[in-house]
Image 1 (cartoon, protein in one colour):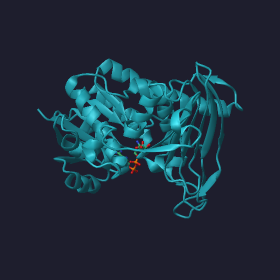
Image 2 (spheres, protein in one colour):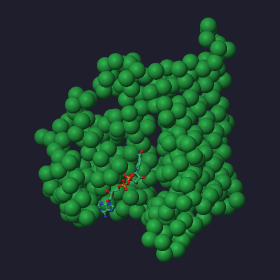
Image 3 (spheres, rainbow, N blue to C red):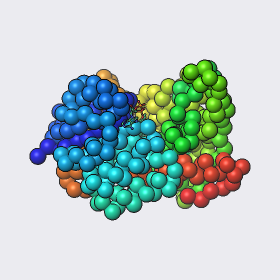
Image 4 (tube, rainbow, N blue to C red):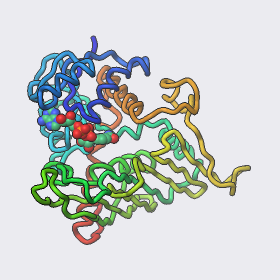
Length: 372
Ligand SMILES: NC(=O)c1ccc[n+]([C@@H]2O[C@H](COP(=O)([O-])OP(=O)(O)OC[C@H]3O[C@@H](n4cnc5c(N)ncnc54)[C@H](O)[C@@H]3O)[C@@H](O)[C@H]2O)c1
């Protein structure tokens, strides 16, 4: 039986989820079929437009009707942050599996309530840490685990974009704590945290600083200015249980950066680095053999780096952001069919959420060390 899908929110991420559901089986093969039962957006005209465009059967403008729909088994939460907790908890209470976009919630308390609801419901949950499914990153994980760069001594995670770099951009809900929660930390740095956890492991403690570059922005209707309540940028210095040190730095005011979701892992024998704007490449330096002292080597992903070959048989042709979402969607559908935990369930994503909130806490307390 095909798995019944309900999608809430049809914007950037809603489209990515819809495409993942539509193509996961065609691309990956061993993925259960799904049925696109219903989607929800506001106003209703928007929902109807995307019902037809994405190929869903029904359209709603009230998400409560969707999470109660008897044919919906999986609910995708692709709305702005302020709705994640309420929708995810309601869906779990209605015995649905949940694929929720990051960050989980506005506050750590809400994220904890989501995790508690997931435990109580015993359903599959998955949070949208799509970069973890990149074949290049999976290869980096293997190389580190096999000891090619030796013992990890430091790690650096960067996530910069320039979507708020222009001081003349109008104020939006993303600047208001009750709508967005954290700023650059919730939008971007949580991805860096996920990649650091994946490649190196959990962070023990940190000290952090934050910056709001433009404290007010003009209202779009010309009626005045409103406060930017959350951070445009943040940086933390990290400590790991094995003594390794690290850095996370993020900015939404970084002119010229479009998706700089970069990570560098330095070890006693070499280094691995990944640059988000060149997502089909991994750069490696190992200080032994003929390549020693010759600088970084670039590995271009291809058939040797699964599941790249599911998308294109030829190396160098490259996969893209939406393909990562398809791999993530396939993981969710397989976990539902197999009755097992998905790769990044609420319990794992909650750990990343703790780190970004620890960064905010440290910064608010003038750089006090916070233990995670
Ligand atoms: N995983 C990633 O890499 C990634 C990238 C971008 C955004 N996100 C996350 O995805 C989420 C959505 O971001 P986006 O960029 O897609 O935003 P978006 O503005 O493009 O889309 C949000 C959608 O939610 C709809 N919506 C708002 N209120 C609603 C309601 N009450 N009922 C139903 N629909 C409603 C909007 O009409 C819109 O279609 C955010 O939490 C964001 O942090 C994740």
